Length: 477
Image (cartoon, rainbow, N blue to C red; front, side, top):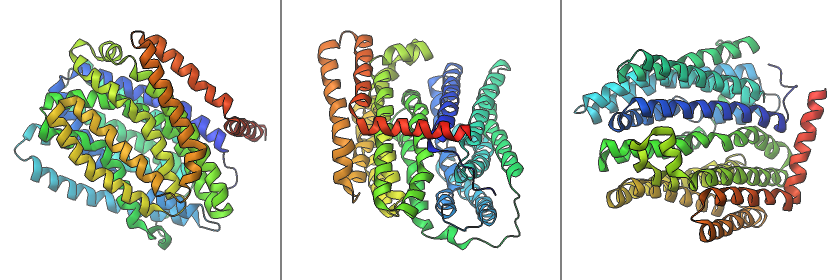
């Protein structure tokens, strides 16, 4: 495999940005279409099934993809051997996941045949597709060619919209809609494997790359916690709320969840670079890169939070119709997830990429345990809005934990967290006090003032211009 001609971070961010915006937009369209096709109860059932599908999809990875990026960043590694070992492990995990997952579904939901059947129709194709997509996406992350990763995402989103629209036009039963939903992921996964096959030869006769399993348990636990936390809501709320209320929460939660992929673009581009920076240049260079990532992701998350906080009822009624208005207050609360998750990703990646994965895992474990309590207590007391507060509380605990356990916490706080969050909170208080009756004006002014940060922060401005310049030079070559 050719390791020499890699994209710059700026170029990778560009490819990931347009593909993520496009695919996230299409996924949001699919959300709107499904919510209008299904009633709130059916959408609640679908959301629970989707949560299990995403959790099982991760179980086919079990942290191996992160280990691949770690091993692939080392000099003189045989990438063909590494890829072959990666695929072998993924296929084994896929079989184990299906066996264990279906046993749990039978055990927990045998008295809910409608929910159980929905899970089977969705999970079989979707989990297989997620496994195949993950193999190809990890490969293109490893060689830092994010244009192919972007193509796979766009392909998956396009197939998803086409499949759902086809199901609606044919007036198919929700079970078959779920089958088509999962099938779109499977087709995109096949496309991804095809693209990998065109760039490299996959030889299963290679010896197993033993370094792949080094510290794998910490990656396994951490990764499982990463995927469990956003899916925790529907699974727990199924026990405390009605399926109709779960549907309202799911609609409100899916909107920031879809947009969360946009700051994830920056994380995806920085992740392999952070590994390489720490392994080859040391902690100082790694810290500077992590602070830059934190600033850029925080700004992105803040801008998206503002866009959704001020006009939730308008967005819900316009996208889904008046019958979904009960979800608008929850959406307003959940809009804060966008800024909190953006910051948390950067802080967590800073720990992982300098061999402090166990600390990240400890924070995630605390957040998961606390989250179960938050969802149960808040939802029983305050319903759908309480569930939204629980989701925000989980992210606040995570933020505090990632920062406190980072050896460079003073530098992170002084150079990024304190100035950026203080500016955002003060602006928020001012806009709510003076312009609470004029939400559109408040949102526009808030966004304009947010742009001032780029002007004030000289270091951020210079780094962004440097990335752009390097990206143009790479293109000229």
